[in-house]
Image (cartoon, rainbow, N blue to C red):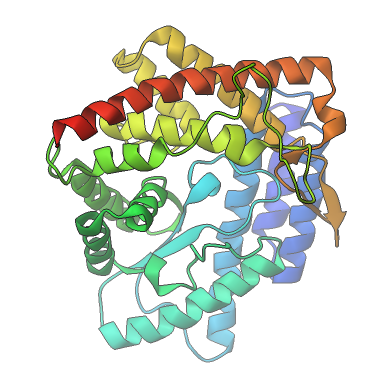
Length: 363
């Protein structure tokens, strides 16, 4: 084992042995600072993997702390097995060091009233603990404290089917979120069960008027590449971020959404964007050169998301998703950003053609 690997394991051991939210937060801060110092010296995919390991360890230990607090408060241990799952960038294992909460809970069978009462309190408490250790609440409330993202497998299936049957903008967005689910801790069989249900629902009515994947394409092509007709980067026009570039919604999310759509179209179950690109390459379903450009653009997007001048608040790194003007003036960074955005522009022209074809088909 290398010295670097041993150090990483030691830091994660401190997280895994934290007995309270306070000690868990302190252990997270130590590991976060170590990782941030390595951002520019490691290949971005390797660095991102270590960041994901950090978050997985913290979230797993937060669940253990939550179980212990539930026992101390007289609720007792969990009345059934459960699985804690992540969505969003955590579900794709692509979090920055300062990501917010995007998570859900699957629990097993048993007395319905007892399970609902216990896991309602468990979800509320777990969200509170995660906030204490440095994960702000999700603005869209995709959290275990929200009953929309918590239930047994039957409840999850009913919810997913409801979204599929409506297929309006918001319901399709929820299905896109759910498509990125990833197991964090607990009973992996519950997560596998939900993943199988998700796959069945996504594949239902393929080629029909109620095609889920076609609806996801409709939502996906709403994003526009942040380059103007002269090939210049489009920055924010007004507000506190005027003159800055929105890395998350201008570059990162458009790539994530496009690759997710292609992965769903070709039956790929991976949630990580790099893995999805790799599997698309293996299938030879999409031109190799197109996917290689996409992979390079995605590397740039992930790197820039973590280079957006974070600040320290109460020991924790926190950041926006805007590249400041002084960074945009750096010649090499600007070139890399323009190339990546050009790739996104080509990707979206292709997807928009597919969308127009699908619309004409059902006229």
